[in-house]
Length: 585
Image (cartoon, rainbow, N blue to C red; front, top):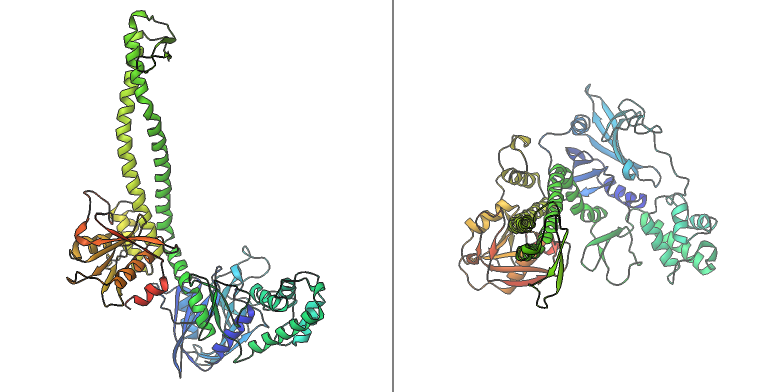
């Protein structure tokens, strides 16, 4: 469900409950995200404001978000003007996705003034704008100049203007009957589209839910609605109005068969069939926090690792092209035995050949049937030289065969290594992890040392988990740490796990000498290994496991590359929620 004006209205009600709270801290994890910590009688509450084009939103969060070492300029401006300010109220423009937080602050002269933080949730045009009481813009997360937009500029010093409003009914001020009449008098289109066209603040998901209630057997166009269906439409619109009132509505999350969040709403949904579950949440902010939490983290890490990802992706693509060319050349060299045979046949027929001959027509004594053969000749060469030419081509291709096989083996190993590093980047959760991956890339010659920051090398601890049976489970964050865990820190009878032929982290069950590991612990460790691999979004993932004493590293192998035998294999479904529940905080 898009973060629509109706859901924003429910978030507004949650923020209104904290009116009178003081601003305790302000941070800016990235260019498009602001975190304001409000201190009130109920403790501290982190309010997240995002102007991300992919997922603009506004809600309270309990997730920990890493901040940069130096605060951005917009963050410093907010701290200057809003620091220790008091939240007075919130204002929503009708049912549009624009919410203004009004603060009472103290200026440089000691006077109390009102400042307004406007949150515009409008897709790629989303923004966070700070203005004074008169509407003068002090600054914004995204400045919009005349080059970017000729219609509406967002720049310090100019007066803030609302974006153009849509000509739709506001469900907060219109009655259910008025909304129903407006919809029924509109164009003859499918009901859900008609609702979307006439009512302000309703997302396509909510419109489909209304249409599903009105027409459970299949959506109808507006002109084909029966009187009973029209009454059902007005009835459900009344239910929506009730849900929008303070204290109304139910925060729900829709999950698919793999327990992945796929939708959210402020009232219970019935349009989803079997295979989906409806989960009721504690608050509307909790819904957004869980729905967007993981993808927001992934997006932040993606932005911060974009340069390294681009470099490694280019290396991977170059390796793929190079291996394809080498494989093609190798296949072409497989016919070299024929050239050796042709050289032998020419040598055996030198007595009957002459210079200038273009084809040798003779018996192929290598063929069991002694069939005749035509061998192309270079007329500029003597017969013996033609034989020598085929022998040279044979030796050249034989040498190329051995060299190509060696190059293909090395290239394949390097490609597998690059895939593991790209997988590490996709699973990175903190800047410290990103720095560790950068240091690994430097150690392998993919990055220059001077391109790195002046920070000291990071010392990361592996991810720690505790099984239901009390066993400590460790999982490496990068290939260098994988080697450290497996080859230096683990003991002979600790259990080692890794996804089969899939890039991922080395996962180790610390046994402390216990030989009999409960099957439940092995299964949980296999799930953790699958979740810390490139197959975390797949199903039925094979995970190999064996004792550490059976794992060894070939001479000259890249970081993280090991071989192992004997081993057993467990087939598990990655379950990020289950793995996170086992993780030690």
